[in-house]
Length: 236
Length: 52
Length: 167
Image (tube, rainbow over all chains, first blue to last red):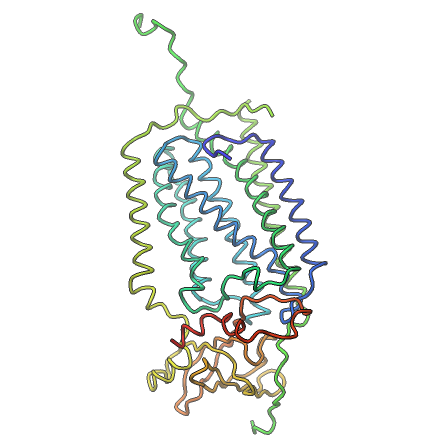
């Protein structure tokens, strides 16, 4: 996928449809086919929405950072449009991530929330994304908006590896990342289905959202000057 | 408070039930996706119509 | 697949100023990351103390609100039934043991050998008075079928933070 160019709406719609199908299949499997976890029982099924949200929130933030970097380095409004779209998608996922985690924490950890390193850095990520989106909506000049928010995204991106490694670097309430060795096979199927489902759904929506951003920018910049006919400059 | 009243059988540590948490998590996730998708679709349609 | 939407033109020119901003942003980000990880901030960020840390702190731990993290010692759980009743257990990191006094019904995951983080304070008697009890489980998710022989080494590893606290 080449992000400086906009995707056709049909591609976006197809991705959204694919995402919905994968999510329906994965959630059905996760809710009704997967066995209970030996200690967590049925509550463990929240993993199949929580972990895909986490992966994709971090992935889309990373892609947004790539677009921000590409905008600053190469220019091109397509990068800026996708930067905006991916930020928004990542913010939606980060928000859902915090809510799902909170609902999962209550019956397992015994609390809705605690300021442990993983939860704190994730909350920082959500606030950073909302802050950059607020910055973008507050700046009217397209060039300044694109440039400033790109710088902000690159700096805020520092939090992404910190979120990921927080459970390894510091002691925390949140457990470490699981791996296929620490997760029984029947749990992995719905996890993967939903992971790709969220990616396709939010990816498709981001492509569509980028078109909205690009069109708005086009309007703000005004109509492009018509190409000058040869020799016209001489007569003027 | 006498220690004799305290049970010494260790708890099994297994979560019983809790489907209400599972339903809440999935419902909020589905609602979040639906609302965001509807908002993106609406904004996209509006911007396509403005073009014409 | 007709697509009438063209990218806005003119695309912003490649500008050296913007490229410098990109370099600057990356440098600031890298410096921030380096400060956080290599610098003192990371070392000083402590979410909970292990039993050894609490023992080492001695009188300093008395009266101050702290978090104590570790594993519930085998055979240490004593509980009454119902709300408001006494719950006693010990938290260990394999080296030191701190007795904990709490009240009420613990989370359902609470059992011997599971990780816990308790918030409260040390009393003069050397008992940790717990006001908030949190269960911290490992990163293992197992179907009941292959649960017969829990691998103790992996179980210990899975509560990663506990080793660091003990170090």
